Length: 109
Image 1 (cartoon, rainbow, N blue to C red):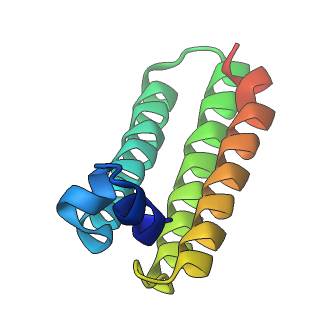
Image 2 (image 1 turned 30 degrees about the vertical axis):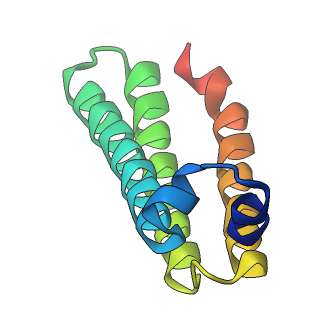
């Protein structure tokens, strides 16, 4: 988020080279794609699973990934890429999703 500091110090970060708006757009698109793909993969896994416990776990994981996708999309909606505090707040929301994913790991096995 410190594009100005990177520019002043001559750091050629991706945000400096491409601009913060474009980088945030691409990073968000990647995150949302990964969450959507994860949700879809667990949904398909639910269909092909034979054991009821596996069906339940995969369905829970699919819903959790879909919720994370929705949370990230809502959080991103309010971010101005040129506002360091707004970008930082979104970054912290991404960490919340990351920690939530860790809480879901026991359901994967």
